[in-house]
Length: 95
Image 1 (tube, rainbow, N blue to C red):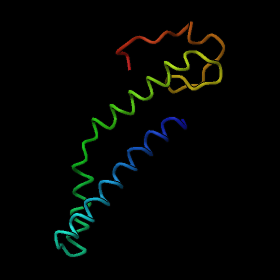
Image 2: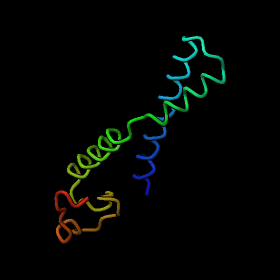
Image 3: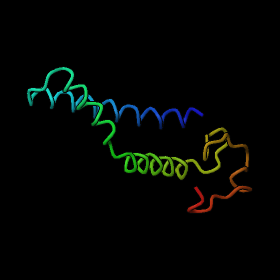
Image 4: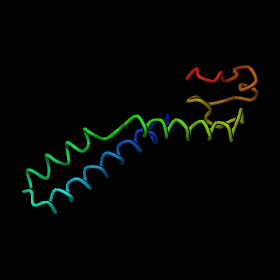
């Protein structure tokens, strides 16, 4: 579960960063507070989520590859046990 929370937190941080940057950019352009806020919200709506999610999934794959079947290491979203990776191999493209 913690692994998923970390991924979602990364998405939240990307949204916050996009909003803050847009708010600042709108201020430099001379927009009032309401206009800056609308611009910031629109930036979050426009944030391209697919590349972000793909990067998170790629990072998770690298983490899984670095710790294949190690007891106690979270593997593909669940707690592993001794030898569980031997009995439940990962099939590419199944996730």
